[in-house]
Length: 55
Image (cartoon, rainbow, N blue to C red; front, side, top):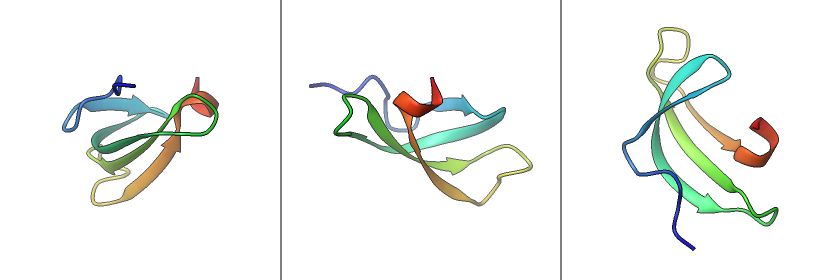
């Protein structure tokens, strides 16, 4: 299974811009994205998002 998300890709999740550092398949058929914040509110923060829950 190839990831729909490329490393280094910029994504917008919850109205903030993030850069993808890792994309791993999750048990629910989606992906777990490990990201670093780019927007002012989240700059310097890291987070993980389950894509199926964010859709």
